[in-house]
Image (cartoon, rainbow, N blue to C red; front, side):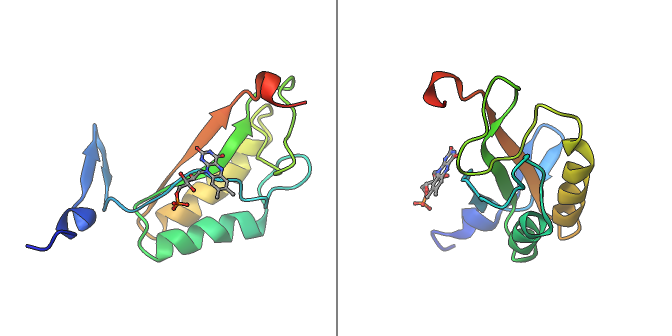
Length: 114
Ligand SMILES: Cc1cc2nc3c(=O)[nH]c(=O)nc-3n(C[C@H](O)[C@H](O)[C@H](O)COP(=O)(O)O)c2cc1C
């Protein structure tokens, strides 16, 4: 048994099974549109990670959840509107197609942002 075997073991979180312990942690992709919708590039960025074997992708580093939490310079996705829902459906489908899972980091930027 090598010291890395655990990395490739599945992980169960309640009813969800993540195929391995390889995670892409939250970061600003800077691939959303100015009004915070995902783009083809955004989707492909995560699809490629899943295709490459990543078990879990965390997208949307510090994505805003409210109209009083401004978009940052990093062009996060905008969760203050339901317009984002079909975009997320596409994103999830692209990742699931290759066996990966995806979750999102959300935040209210509050006093940290102007
Ligand atoms: C450009 C950039 C943006 C990041 N944005 C976030 C973020 O929005 N939320 C977060 O929790 N971590 C963020 N991180 C931290 C990363 O998720 C990760 O924890 C960190 O880069 C350490 O991993 P590494 O050594 O593989 O780079 C960011 C990192 C980088 C380099």
